[in-house]
Length: 189
Image (tube, rainbow, N blue to C red; front, side, top):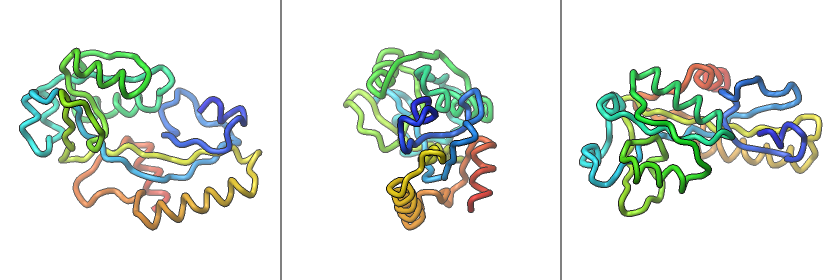
């Protein structure tokens, strides 16, 4: 979000927590969606035999945590999940993009958090996590000092679409979010 802070972008999407500093006073946020997080594993990993993986099962399989320096919010989310569920970290790798993360899982053979609906190479598979389902929150973030009519209309459309399609609604199953995200969800629902 650094470019957004300087006013170079009209709108950005991301998690506004875990950045190592508060958002600037001129920035506003709007919750947009909750993305269920699963586990990415080698296709022959012991957890690959399950349709869903209980989150507690990851305690027996140390994780690969992949985060670029620019994704402090993802790194924070993963660290909070590890701490909340007593998980172990096998290794931390830095790299840019999804391809880098998938290559690390292939090479090091440790499970990693990721989208359960991700398109993966044949050597990897994704499984949904359950009991609880970890959720990654997405927010629209914009600079209120540069807001223009087109941006306001875009925000209206995003809000309407997200609400109509229930992107902001947690699943009916047991779910988890880090505390600041949970507090924001409660305040907006």
